[in-house]
Image (cartoon, rainbow, N blue to C red; front, side, top):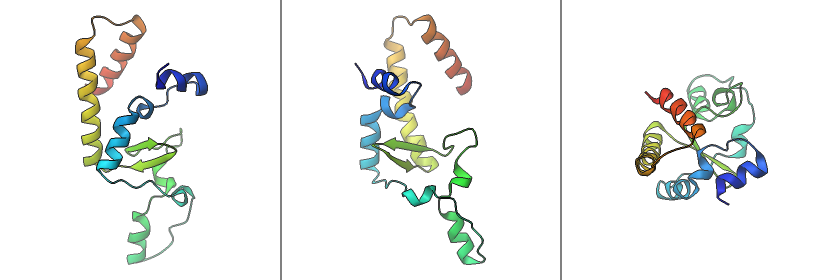
Length: 129
């Protein structure tokens, strides 16, 4: 059983690209020497400071700004072994372009797909184009 099937069996639902691309995520974190977010970053805190301290405080990660009310973090990030790694736009573009290349190769090699796969692919492509 592959990682994705195991995840769905245990947890239900879609885990995001982290499980499917676990080895790629690990390598990207190592090559780019990324550090995980601290657990303190997820604790709400007031940013009621002025001057230079306010600029420094706002540059810290605060879930008030990164957590969408519908659930989930909306900033580019990776999950790996219980940790979250924030990415800047340059890092995200590099990571996602590597994944897209893999997807393109697999799709080009596929002779056919199931009906459900075609529906999911169509939905995904509609969001990209």
